[in-house]
Amino acid sequence: MSIVGHAIDSMGIDPGAILRSLALVVLIAIAARYVGRWLRRRVERSLSVRSFGRNGAILLGRLTSLAIYVAASIAILASLGVSGTGLLTFLGAGTVALGLSLQDVLKNFFSGVFLLMERPFRVGDFIRIRDVEGEVQGIDVRTTLVRINDGSLVMIPNSLVFTEILTNRSKSGTRRIDLVVVAEGRSILEAERLIHETLRSMPEVSRPIAAPVVTAASSAQTIFSLSVLVDDSRDAEQRVIHALVSAVDDESITISRP
Image (cartoon, rainbow, N blue to C red):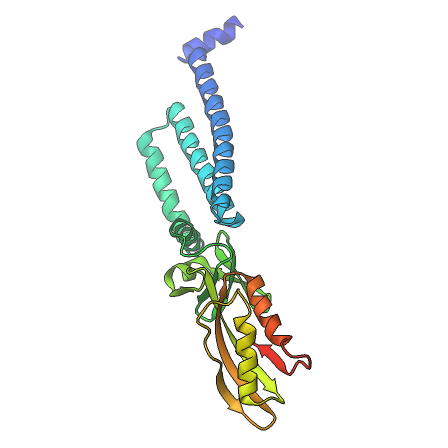
């Protein structure tokens, strides 16, 4: 042991300083682990309550914990005597290289973060972007998830959602549904009366109720186009459609989307 101690002294190594540095590194790593996990859970619970959606809450929660880990790593390197200037130079070069290689991914990621901050829509809102219209299911790392009318799940890049013109039909607490009603074996006046009475009897339908517009007529059938404001929920939309379908016993009225 004396030989080892003499060798350490001859190299100018201070065992006490090494132990203190190691203890500091361990403390920083443990603190970063527990603080990062606690903040992530706190952010996820808080954002979920505010209707950001599970995916968006997880996204920002992980981003928060990542920031804690990066700060802890910098603190550990600084405690080990790494030059601050060299560290900043290395981080800057690494950031540039990473940004160039993951340009599209990062663009979609940060667009998703800005969407969560600005909140132009919530999970459950009925939105339209370009030719995609449906109900928002959540915001993922790269995409916004929208369920369209046929039940399919469309994944739209966050950068497209952030930069394109977006229509939120749910901002006023209502959503508009555009329907095509085909009435067979009934006169135009009788079909109009039946449609109007059915919609007027439903509290889910906002007033005033627009009159159906005749788009085609023949001796066998009359085709109406109808635009209706209903309460902002898929259940309300389905109740309105089912009421129109079942308004007559012989099902001479059918509903389809234009």
